[in-house]
Image (tube, rainbow, N blue to C red):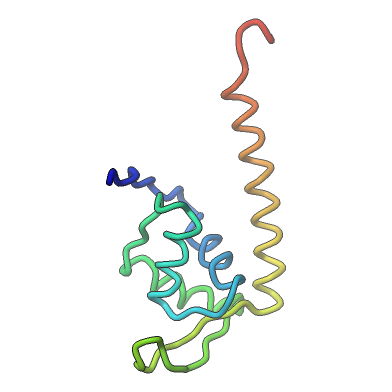
Length: 115
C-alpha cells in the first residue's frame, strides 16, 4: 500500500491544528498527534518535540485546559480540552485561514485569459 507524502506545516498552523483536534473531544498529548494525522488524511505528522511545547503555550494562554485522567492503556495522562477563549480563537483562526485559502486558490487558478 502506497503511503501519502507528508506535508510540511506552515508557520503558525500547529496551534490551530491542536485547537481543532481538542475541539472534537478531550485528548491526551499522543492522542492529539494521532487526531491531527487522522483529520489531515495522514498528510501531517507532527513531531512530539513540537507538540508538547505548543500544548504548554496554549495552556498558558488559557486556550486549552488540562485534566489528569487514564489513557486507553491505563497510564496517567493529561487530557486537553478547549476553554471558551480557545473556542473563540479556533473560530477566528479558522475563518482567517479559510479566507486565505480561498484567496490563494483564486490566485493560483487564474489564467492569462482571465486578466
